[in-house]
Amino acid sequence: LVEESGAEAIDLGIIPDQPGELRKRFEEALGAADVIVSSGGVSRGSKDHIKALLQDLGTVHFGEMCMKPGKPTTFATALPPAHTTVAGARHRLVFALPGNPVSCFVTF
Image 1: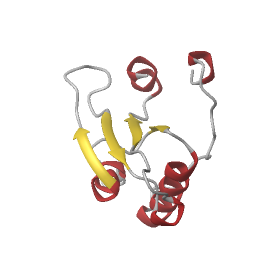
Image 2: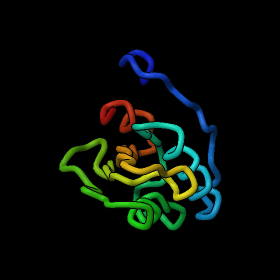
Image 3: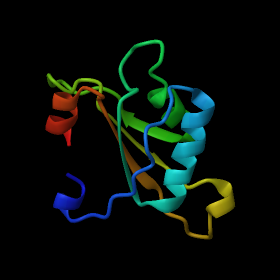
């Protein structure tokens, strides 16, 4: 879907539901891309760490939508990690989509 929309996709693979590993990979993504689109980890389960991570890395602008499927979709902005930041660095856009394939598709 990303490439069909005219963008270049960078696949960071499947990330385990572990806060430390999620942070590492999201920081990598923030340093490599202007827009990050992820799927999974945004609902209310005990293994859903993405919203908390995005609150720590930047600003969550919304964490739910009035839409089914797709309710837990989250949008945030964040700066790249300090070691890749240069003067005038721009915020990255982060779209965290639900992990359910249908929810992910309709919210993309």
